[in-house]
Length: 146
Image 1 (cartoon, one colour):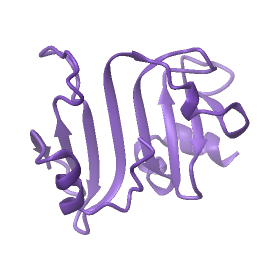
Image 2: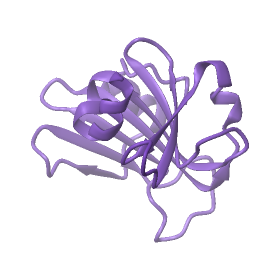
Image 3: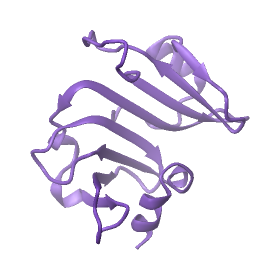
């Protein structure tokens, strides 16, 4: 995940992952490039795409890269405790879902979905622009501001 800078252009993405299996442009402001299978993972018809890349229209700026895994993964090496905070949806007082978040830069965040502490595995990682949190994860944006 950390090989992505979120500065990649569509041509670069296509060189890295190939042509997407599906492009969802049902929302005028964004395109979602979906790649069904990666890294020879065993997947079934009910599995989410291995990669989902969100690009903003019309400038095609890469906003996020989501990596879905077929099996839960140990991602502790991506979330050093001193650089990572845990957030809860809908809030810390009534947690129903947790994420670990690590700032990679002032504009790039790495999120481990469904994990709150080291040792917990995840099936989804999201690398996202800080500026895109307000649109795609407003609950996390509010907490990250605090």
